[in-house]
Image 1 (spheres, rainbow, N blue to C red):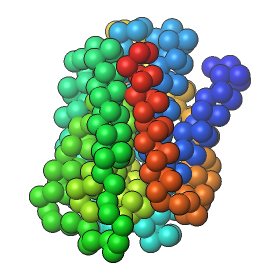
Image 2 (cartoon, helix red, strand yellow; image 1 turned 180 degrees about the vertical axis):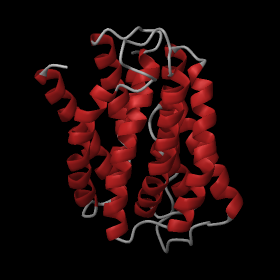
Image 3 (cartoon, rainbow, N blue to C red; image 1 turned 120 degrees about the horizontal axis):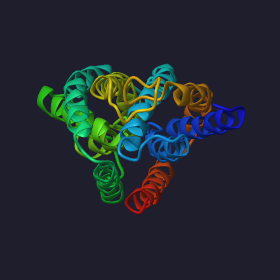
Image 4 (cartoon, one colour; image 1 turned 45 degrees about the vertical axis):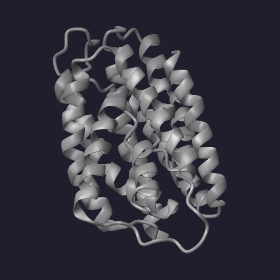
Length: 267
């Protein structure tokens, strides 16, 4: 990899980490399109480029979510019972999703990614709660496990880390305050993203369509500069989010998802 490509990837990682920190989006909505372009320019076969982009994205998301979790933990904005239960079910969903994804074609994966964004946008625009005293979050075992299973499955099928679906579910259906939904989902997604990345690595191991030196559906050379940019970006974004207005964050969050959704449907 030449120095220009490494710098551009680091810059993309910085932007992804920053947006993830501010809006709690995990970074995948930036990383997947960037990695798709990078994989194609690097000569990765179009038959596996989407798989590599999503597997590599999940690896980077794991680091971004770890950075976010540290920031939210310091601000007391993570509910650990929710994070642990969602993560445990999310691992199963992530491994199942990566197995399914390995058998799908790239365009199908991109459509799944776009549909996930569409659902998230709809829930954020329609799921505004009435003003007043916040209700207690629903920390019952069944809904948390169901959320985790769905988050893990969606995470692996779309390469986004799961925050795009976890935050709307926690906010709308489980009654989490928005910031605590961001913090709790970040903690859970460290584990589910790791499981999803491991699944892509294993399922792609030895695939004859991959370039030499790429043992699975993860591009390690591309991941390193992305991570180096994403970690400081996540730190800066999380600190800014602590001072941001919650309704404004929710609106910007939904608009960003809408733009990326349209892009993925017509990529």
